[in-house]
Length: 398
Image (cartoon, rainbow, N blue to C red; front, side):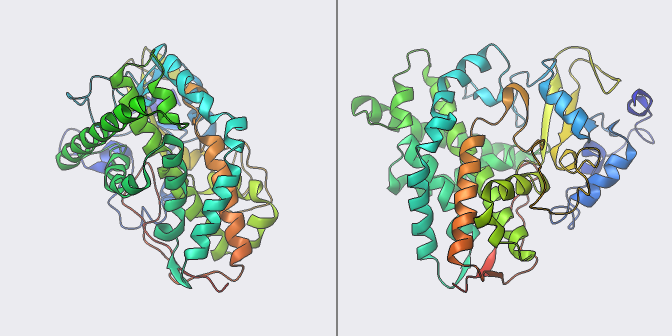
C-alpha cells in the first residue's frame, strides 16, 4: 500500500479537474445517480491511493474506520469552505479535543437513547399527520421525508412554527458547502447563509433568555460555559445536521424498498431495514480528515497536513466485511456500517435519526402497502457528501 500511495501522481503539472483532485468526476451525469460503480473502480486501484492533486483517498472499511478512530487525524478547526471572518468560532463538528470534547458534552445530554425515546409519541404523531395529508399522487421528499425531521428538530430547539420555512434555503446551501470542491459563488453563498442563520438565532436566543421554555435552545442559553459565538454555531449545526441526513435516509429507504417490492418489511422489522438502508446507500457518502502530525494509514505514510478522504459509500460495500455487498438485503446484519462514522465524531443524532427512519418507513408501509414509484429513476441533488434525492414521485394506493 505504501508503494501505491507514493506512486507518481500523473503526467505532470497542468490544469486539474475534479477527477484529478478527488479520484472521480462528480460532473459525470451518471455519478450522482449511481456512484457505487465508480467507487468499485477506485477500490480496484487499492485500499489507499493518492490522486493527481495530492489528495489521499481511503476506500475500504478497515482504513476508513482506522482514520475515523485515530486521534492523529482531525479537522484542524478548518471547515471545508474556509474560515468565515465574521464567525470567530466554528461548530464542534470542525473542532478537535479539548474544545470538541467540552462542547459536545454540553449538547449530548439531549440526544441520549433515553431522551430520544421520549420523543417517540410526538414523532409518531407528526408522521401520521404528514401521511394523512398526502394526496394520492405525491412527492415523498417534499411531502414526507423532508418535513418530518424538520418538524422534529425545530420543535426540539423551540423554533416557532411560522419560521420553519425560512430554514430550507439556508440549510440547502450549508449542506452543499460540505462538498470537497466549492466554487467561489458557493463559498460566498455559504457565508451569507451562515450570517443570516446566526442573526436569526441571535434574536431567538434573546427571546428565550427573557422567556425561557422547555426546549433545547432555552436549556443551551442557560449554560454559562457556552460563549455566544459557540452557542450560535451549535444552534446552526443542530438544526442543519438534525434533518439533512435524515431526509436522505427516509427517502432512500422508500426508494430501495418500494422499487424492490420490499416495503412491507419496514413494518415487520423496521430496525433491520433502516440499518440496511444506512449501509447500502448512506446519507453521508464522504468524510475527510487532516493529518495533525506525521502518521500512517494502512502501512502508507501520511505527512502532517495531508488531507485524507474516506469514501464511506465504498467502505459500506466492502466485500471483506459485507458478503454480496451490492445486494440490498433487509435480512442481513449490517451492524458494522460506517454511515454515522466512528470515534469522537460519531454522529450525535444517530439515535434520533434511526428512530425517525424506523417510525417513518413503518408507518408508510402500513398506511400505503401498495405504494408505487411513478418515476423509476428519480433525480438526485448535486450534493456529493450529503447525497440525496431531489424528489420522489409516487402513487400511494392506500
